[in-house]
Length: 119
Length: 107
Image 1 (cartoon, one colour):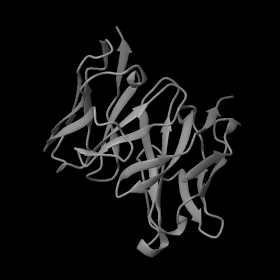
Image 2: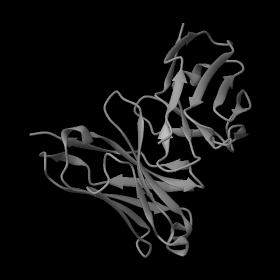
Image 3: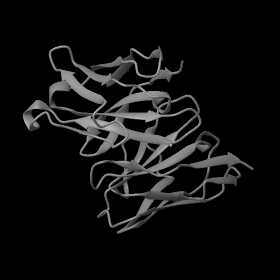
Image 4: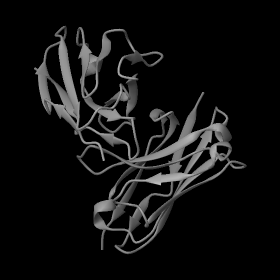
């Protein structure tokens, strides 16, 4: 059974940093393309970025609002996906979901972790 | 970036009704479209991919159609568990983009 479990969310001040983790199991993580999607309170879904498998180059793509501030990485030995978030803004407040990507469709999702950016 | 416009933003319907949600892309996306269902406090769930392919385990009352820029999600006979918010997402190019969502409410 595919499982994705996010952690690392919490309260952080504007300008601060936070690293989210997504522990994966039930599939061959090293072969998977992975993605982060966020959802601000009461709002719709917003794609954050994705990382390819190392076999496919391990490259990353980001949405414009987070480019240059957020970094997606992976540790295949730990079957864990990461989202390093720097220079956080109040508008980054959201539930952050990790997902597996089948081509460009998110077919499995974690339960999400809440990030609150507030002074 | 490709903009995705969903309509309506909300719909009130009764159990057994046929419900149709539309999604329009700002440019052609070659059928690279997904539909997701999200219930309050839960993660989204993939229902349809490639515009019309049903994800494994999804009931057959859900169907998708369309091509180019105009797409439709149809629920043929609404069930109590279908009251939720539905999102379309284009998968043609990065950055991936979602529609604003359609909330299906009980009439």
